[in-house]
Image (cartoon, rainbow, N blue to C red; front, side, top):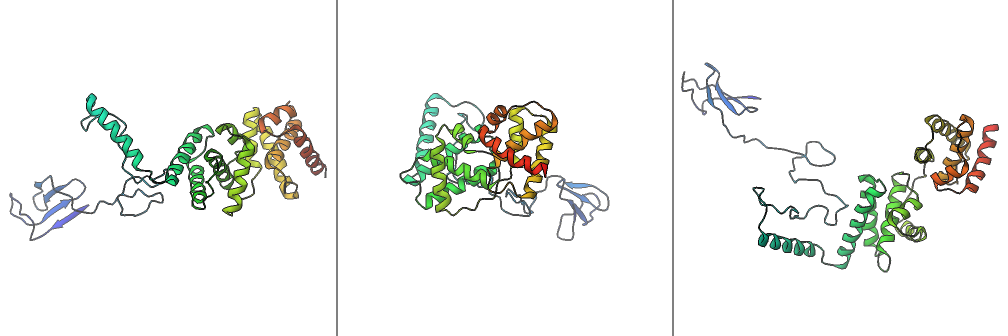
Length: 304
Protein backbone atom coordinates (compact mmCIF):
# COMPACT_ATOMS: atom_id res chain seq x y z
CA UNK A 1 0.00 0.00 0.00
CA UNK A 2 1.56 3.30 -1.16
CA UNK A 3 0.76 6.69 0.39
CA UNK A 4 1.83 10.16 -0.68
CA UNK A 5 3.29 12.48 1.97
CA UNK A 6 3.07 16.13 0.73
CA UNK A 7 4.29 19.53 1.98
CA UNK A 8 4.41 18.87 5.72
CA UNK A 9 6.44 15.66 5.28
CA UNK A 10 10.24 15.27 5.12
CA UNK A 11 12.36 16.54 2.19
CA UNK A 12 14.51 14.32 0.00
CA UNK A 13 18.17 14.87 1.08
CA UNK A 14 19.34 14.16 -2.50
CA UNK A 15 17.13 16.31 -4.76
CA UNK A 16 15.15 18.35 -2.16
CA UNK A 17 11.77 17.23 -3.51
CA UNK A 18 8.90 17.07 -1.02
CA UNK A 19 6.91 14.31 -2.76
CA UNK A 20 7.75 11.39 -0.47
CA UNK A 21 5.96 8.08 -0.99
CA UNK A 22 5.33 5.81 2.03
CA UNK A 23 5.09 2.02 1.55
CA UNK A 24 3.01 0.67 4.47
CA UNK A 25 3.83 -3.00 3.78
CA UNK A 26 7.65 -2.62 3.92
CA UNK A 27 7.84 0.42 6.23
CA UNK A 28 9.92 2.52 3.79
CA UNK A 29 9.71 6.17 2.67
CA UNK A 30 11.02 6.87 -0.85
CA UNK A 31 11.41 9.99 -2.97
CA UNK A 32 8.95 9.87 -5.90
CA UNK A 33 11.37 11.88 -8.11
CA UNK A 34 14.83 10.27 -7.67
CA UNK A 35 13.81 7.02 -5.86
CA UNK A 36 16.07 7.54 -2.82
CA UNK A 37 14.99 5.62 0.34
CA UNK A 38 14.61 8.41 2.91
CA UNK A 39 13.66 6.17 5.88
CA UNK A 40 13.36 2.38 6.17
CA UNK A 41 12.12 2.06 9.77
CA UNK A 42 8.88 4.01 10.05
CA UNK A 43 6.32 3.25 12.77
CA UNK A 44 2.96 1.86 11.66
CA UNK A 45 0.30 4.03 13.31
CA UNK A 46 -2.71 2.34 11.67
CA UNK A 47 -5.18 0.20 13.65
CA UNK A 48 -4.17 -3.43 14.05
CA UNK A 49 -7.43 -5.34 13.91
CA UNK A 50 -7.13 -9.02 14.65
CA UNK A 51 -10.29 -11.11 15.02
CA UNK A 52 -10.29 -14.08 17.42
CA UNK A 53 -14.03 -14.63 17.44
CA UNK A 54 -15.54 -17.95 16.34
CA UNK A 55 -17.66 -16.24 13.69
CA UNK A 56 -14.70 -14.37 12.17
CA UNK A 57 -15.38 -11.25 10.17
CA UNK A 58 -14.17 -7.66 10.72
CA UNK A 59 -14.28 -7.68 14.50
CA UNK A 60 -11.86 -5.01 15.88
CA UNK A 61 -11.55 -6.60 19.35
CA UNK A 62 -8.17 -7.92 20.48
CA UNK A 63 -8.96 -10.08 23.47
CA UNK A 64 -7.05 -13.32 22.91
CA UNK A 65 -8.62 -16.76 22.65
CA UNK A 66 -12.44 -17.16 22.39
CA UNK A 67 -14.44 -17.85 25.55
CA UNK A 68 -15.74 -21.36 26.16
CA UNK A 69 -18.53 -22.81 28.33
CA UNK A 70 -16.39 -25.90 28.99
CA UNK A 71 -14.18 -23.88 31.37
CA UNK A 72 -15.64 -22.90 34.75
CA UNK A 73 -14.42 -19.29 34.33
CA UNK A 74 -15.18 -19.32 30.55
CA UNK A 75 -11.47 -18.90 29.86
CA UNK A 76 -11.31 -15.32 31.16
CA UNK A 77 -9.09 -15.88 34.22
CA UNK A 78 -5.31 -15.53 34.36
CA UNK A 79 -3.47 -18.88 34.33
CA UNK A 80 -0.02 -19.40 35.87
CA UNK A 81 2.11 -21.32 33.39
CA UNK A 82 2.67 -24.95 34.51
CA UNK A 83 6.24 -24.89 33.12
CA UNK A 84 8.74 -24.04 35.86
CA UNK A 85 10.78 -21.67 33.69
CA UNK A 86 11.42 -17.93 33.72
CA UNK A 87 10.90 -15.42 30.89
CA UNK A 88 14.25 -16.29 29.26
CA UNK A 89 13.48 -20.04 29.31
CA UNK A 90 15.85 -20.96 32.15
CA UNK A 91 14.59 -23.37 34.84
CA UNK A 92 13.60 -21.82 38.17
CA UNK A 93 15.64 -22.31 41.33
CA UNK A 94 14.37 -24.74 43.99
CA UNK A 95 13.17 -22.01 46.35
CA UNK A 96 11.43 -20.07 43.57
CA UNK A 97 9.83 -23.28 42.28
CA UNK A 98 8.22 -23.99 45.67
CA UNK A 99 6.99 -20.37 45.84
CA UNK A 100 5.38 -20.61 42.40
CA UNK A 101 3.75 -23.96 43.31
CA UNK A 102 2.21 -22.34 46.36
CA UNK A 103 0.99 -19.42 44.25
CA UNK A 104 -0.61 -21.86 41.79
CA UNK A 105 -2.41 -23.62 44.65
CA UNK A 106 -3.84 -20.40 46.07
CA UNK A 107 -4.71 -19.15 42.58
CA UNK A 108 -6.76 -22.27 41.86
CA UNK A 109 -8.46 -22.08 45.28
CA UNK A 110 -9.35 -18.42 44.89
CA UNK A 111 -11.17 -19.02 41.59
CA UNK A 112 -14.01 -21.01 43.20
CA UNK A 113 -15.67 -19.20 46.13
CA UNK A 114 -19.14 -20.70 46.47
CA UNK A 115 -20.15 -24.37 46.54
CA UNK A 116 -21.91 -23.97 43.15
CA UNK A 117 -18.67 -22.79 41.54
CA UNK A 118 -16.77 -25.71 43.05
CA UNK A 119 -19.45 -28.10 41.82
CA UNK A 120 -19.26 -26.64 38.30
CA UNK A 121 -15.48 -26.92 38.30
CA UNK A 122 -15.57 -30.62 39.26
CA UNK A 123 -18.30 -31.36 36.70
CA UNK A 124 -16.49 -29.67 33.80
CA UNK A 125 -13.27 -31.52 34.70
CA UNK A 126 -15.23 -34.78 34.51
CA UNK A 127 -16.54 -33.80 31.06
CA UNK A 128 -13.04 -33.07 29.72
CA UNK A 129 -11.85 -36.50 30.95
CA UNK A 130 -14.69 -38.32 29.15
CA UNK A 131 -14.19 -36.40 25.88
CA UNK A 132 -11.36 -38.60 24.59
CA UNK A 133 -12.85 -41.84 25.96
CA UNK A 134 -16.08 -41.39 24.00
CA UNK A 135 -14.44 -39.56 21.04
CA UNK A 136 -16.72 -36.52 21.44
CA UNK A 137 -16.35 -33.28 19.49
CA UNK A 138 -15.96 -29.79 20.97
CA UNK A 139 -19.53 -28.94 19.88
CA UNK A 140 -20.99 -31.81 21.95
CA UNK A 141 -18.91 -30.82 25.00
CA UNK A 142 -19.99 -27.15 24.69
CA UNK A 143 -23.65 -28.22 24.54
CA UNK A 144 -23.21 -30.56 27.55
CA UNK A 145 -21.58 -27.75 29.55
CA UNK A 146 -24.45 -25.40 28.62
CA UNK A 147 -27.07 -27.94 29.78
CA UNK A 148 -25.19 -28.53 33.06
CA UNK A 149 -25.00 -24.78 33.75
CA UNK A 150 -28.77 -24.54 33.21
CA UNK A 151 -29.32 -27.46 35.61
CA UNK A 152 -27.11 -25.69 38.16
CA UNK A 153 -29.19 -22.50 37.84
CA UNK A 154 -32.41 -24.47 38.47
CA UNK A 155 -30.72 -26.14 41.51
CA UNK A 156 -31.22 -29.64 40.09
CA UNK A 157 -27.70 -30.62 41.17
CA UNK A 158 -28.40 -30.42 44.91
CA UNK A 159 -28.51 -33.88 46.52
CA UNK A 160 -27.61 -35.70 43.30
CA UNK A 161 -24.45 -37.34 42.01
CA UNK A 162 -22.24 -35.00 39.96
CA UNK A 163 -21.06 -37.91 37.81
CA UNK A 164 -24.64 -39.01 37.08
CA UNK A 165 -25.73 -35.51 36.05
CA UNK A 166 -22.60 -35.03 33.91
CA UNK A 167 -23.31 -38.32 32.12
CA UNK A 168 -26.96 -37.28 31.58
CA UNK A 169 -25.89 -33.89 30.17
CA UNK A 170 -23.43 -35.57 27.78
CA UNK A 171 -26.16 -37.99 26.62
CA UNK A 172 -28.59 -35.08 26.13
CA UNK A 173 -25.93 -33.18 24.14
CA UNK A 174 -25.32 -36.26 21.96
CA UNK A 175 -29.05 -36.56 21.31
CA UNK A 176 -29.33 -32.84 20.53
CA UNK A 177 -26.38 -32.82 18.10
CA UNK A 178 -27.38 -36.21 16.60
CA UNK A 179 -24.12 -37.85 17.68
CA UNK A 180 -24.63 -41.65 17.78
CA UNK A 181 -23.78 -42.47 21.43
CA UNK A 182 -26.01 -44.78 23.46
CA UNK A 183 -26.63 -44.80 27.21
CA UNK A 184 -24.62 -48.03 27.34
CA UNK A 185 -21.59 -46.30 25.72
CA UNK A 186 -21.67 -43.41 28.18
CA UNK A 187 -22.20 -45.76 31.15
CA UNK A 188 -19.13 -47.78 30.13
CA UNK A 189 -17.03 -44.68 29.45
CA UNK A 190 -17.83 -43.08 32.82
CA UNK A 191 -18.03 -46.32 34.86
CA UNK A 192 -21.54 -45.57 36.11
CA UNK A 193 -24.81 -47.51 36.06
CA UNK A 194 -27.06 -47.03 33.04
CA UNK A 195 -30.05 -46.76 35.40
CA UNK A 196 -28.54 -43.72 37.19
CA UNK A 197 -27.88 -41.89 33.88
CA UNK A 198 -31.44 -42.58 32.68
CA UNK A 199 -32.90 -41.22 35.95
CA UNK A 200 -30.88 -37.99 35.74
CA UNK A 201 -31.63 -37.62 32.02
CA UNK A 202 -35.39 -37.84 32.65
CA UNK A 203 -35.05 -35.17 35.34
CA UNK A 204 -33.18 -32.61 33.19
CA UNK A 205 -35.36 -33.40 30.17
CA UNK A 206 -38.50 -32.64 32.19
CA UNK A 207 -37.26 -29.67 34.23
CA UNK A 208 -35.30 -27.87 31.48
CA UNK A 209 -37.97 -28.64 28.84
CA UNK A 210 -35.40 -29.85 26.31
CA UNK A 211 -36.48 -30.39 22.70
CA UNK A 212 -34.75 -33.44 21.24
CA UNK A 213 -34.68 -34.20 17.51
CA UNK A 214 -35.65 -37.66 16.28
CA UNK A 215 -32.49 -39.76 15.93
CA UNK A 216 -31.70 -40.83 12.37
CA UNK A 217 -31.02 -44.62 12.36
CA UNK A 218 -28.78 -44.23 9.26
CA UNK A 219 -26.14 -42.59 11.48
CA UNK A 220 -25.92 -45.76 13.57
CA UNK A 221 -25.16 -48.00 10.58
CA UNK A 222 -21.53 -46.92 10.06
CA UNK A 223 -20.85 -47.27 13.79
CA UNK A 224 -22.25 -50.82 14.03
CA UNK A 225 -20.63 -51.84 10.72
CA UNK A 226 -17.17 -50.67 11.81
CA UNK A 227 -17.38 -52.59 15.11
CA UNK A 228 -18.72 -55.75 13.39
CA UNK A 229 -16.18 -55.30 10.53
CA UNK A 230 -18.77 -55.39 7.73
CA UNK A 231 -18.07 -54.56 4.10
CA UNK A 232 -18.96 -51.29 2.37
CA UNK A 233 -21.39 -53.18 0.12
CA UNK A 234 -23.44 -54.34 3.13
CA UNK A 235 -23.43 -50.82 4.60
CA UNK A 236 -24.81 -49.31 1.40
CA UNK A 237 -27.48 -52.01 1.13
CA UNK A 238 -28.51 -51.36 4.75
CA UNK A 239 -28.85 -47.62 4.02
CA UNK A 240 -31.13 -48.39 1.06
CA UNK A 241 -33.31 -50.65 3.25
CA UNK A 242 -33.53 -47.95 5.95
CA UNK A 243 -34.44 -45.21 3.47
CA UNK A 244 -37.22 -47.44 2.14
CA UNK A 245 -38.40 -48.10 5.71
CA UNK A 246 -38.53 -44.35 6.39
CA UNK A 247 -40.76 -43.77 3.38
CA UNK A 248 -43.20 -46.48 4.50
CA UNK A 249 -43.20 -45.22 8.11
CA UNK A 250 -41.94 -48.41 9.81
CA UNK A 251 -39.15 -46.49 11.62
CA UNK A 252 -41.57 -44.33 13.64
CA UNK A 253 -41.58 -45.18 17.35
CA UNK A 254 -38.80 -47.77 17.08
CA UNK A 255 -35.37 -47.73 18.68
CA UNK A 256 -32.99 -46.27 16.01
CA UNK A 257 -30.11 -48.65 16.89
CA UNK A 258 -32.47 -51.64 16.76
CA UNK A 259 -33.72 -50.71 13.28
CA UNK A 260 -30.13 -50.04 12.11
CA UNK A 261 -28.93 -53.43 13.44
CA UNK A 262 -31.84 -55.28 11.78
CA UNK A 263 -31.28 -53.57 8.43
CA UNK A 264 -27.56 -54.47 8.59
CA UNK A 265 -28.43 -58.10 9.31
CA UNK A 266 -30.81 -58.24 6.32
CA UNK A 267 -28.21 -56.46 4.16
CA UNK A 268 -25.62 -59.13 5.08
CA UNK A 269 -28.06 -61.87 4.03
CA UNK A 270 -28.77 -60.19 0.66
CA UNK A 271 -25.06 -59.54 -0.10
CA UNK A 272 -23.99 -63.02 1.01
CA UNK A 273 -21.80 -61.78 3.85
CA UNK A 274 -21.77 -64.26 6.74
CA UNK A 275 -22.58 -62.51 10.01
CA UNK A 276 -24.68 -63.99 12.81
CA UNK A 277 -27.32 -62.14 14.81
CA UNK A 278 -25.11 -62.60 17.87
CA UNK A 279 -22.21 -60.68 16.27
CA UNK A 280 -24.42 -57.78 15.19
CA UNK A 281 -26.12 -57.81 18.62
CA UNK A 282 -22.75 -57.42 20.39
CA UNK A 283 -21.63 -54.66 17.98
CA UNK A 284 -24.86 -52.65 18.36
CA UNK A 285 -25.66 -53.30 22.03
CA UNK A 286 -29.16 -54.49 21.02
CA UNK A 287 -30.54 -57.90 22.04
CA UNK A 288 -31.00 -60.65 19.45
CA UNK A 289 -34.74 -60.76 20.22
CA UNK A 290 -35.10 -57.05 19.25
CA UNK A 291 -33.15 -57.63 16.02
CA UNK A 292 -35.43 -60.58 15.11
CA UNK A 293 -38.59 -58.56 15.85
CA UNK A 294 -37.40 -55.62 13.70
CA UNK A 295 -36.40 -58.00 10.89
CA UNK A 296 -40.01 -59.29 10.71
CA UNK A 297 -41.34 -55.80 9.88
CA UNK A 298 -38.52 -55.04 7.43
CA UNK A 299 -38.98 -58.36 5.59
CA UNK A 300 -42.71 -57.66 5.12
CA UNK A 301 -41.84 -54.24 3.71
CA UNK A 302 -39.27 -55.68 1.29
CA UNK A 303 -41.74 -58.35 0.06
CA UNK A 304 -44.41 -55.74 -0.61
